[in-house]
Amino acid sequence: GGVFFLVVVGGGGGGGGGGYGAWALGGGEPEPHVGERQPREVKRRFLHAAWVANSLAYFMQGAFATLAPFVGVRLGLSATETIWLVSSLLFARAVSFWVFWKWEGWHYHKGWSLAALGLGPVFLTGMFFGPSAWVVLGCCGGFGLVIGLGYYMSIFYSMDYGPDKGEGGGLHESLIGCGFLAGPLSGAVGLAALGSSAGAQVSVLAVGLGITAFGAWRLRRV
Image (cartoon, rainbow, N blue to C red; front, side):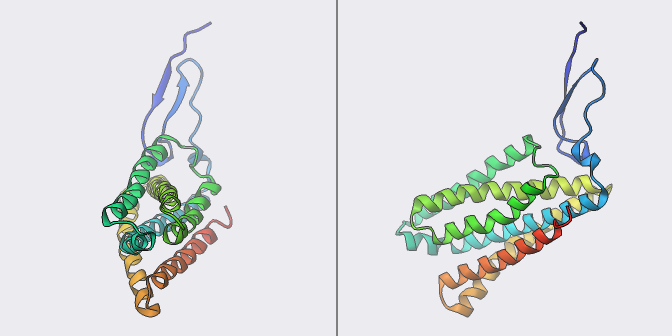
């Protein structure tokens, strides 16, 4: 017997206890959030990797937005069709924001952090050099999901790591701006140095792979 009431606890993640959990009023205490069981050093490494993944995502997004006209010309697309192709990335990103806000299975899982770091350059390669518009479209969708994952990793771990949430959130936002600035600059340097749009794209990918390697190195002891 006994009557049980389901209580849903909402919240995005400050202090490690956020998210959506449930327990019965008559059935004991709720399960602690996975973040509450992590040593502080482990949480710090997840945080640093998330900052890298977030800045990498917006670095690559900024670079692709700048170089997308060259992709459209290579595929024989009109300006309108190229704009719609780029917009598919933004749609996928919007969907991923909702998914990773509602679903918490990625919290403090190394595999998801590595996916946020490693899949971006893979999808960007397909977006730059895919043989057809459909391949590029699929890669745009996958890349949009990666951007959303990196974004939510960065903001969640920033809020969950320590008491100074304002500073963590501010750094999270500043990394987005730095990435948006560095991406087009990297492409411009590659274009000037190598003299072609393909050279600019390769330069962006090379920098992106270097950033990925650094982020993965931060997770080596997790």
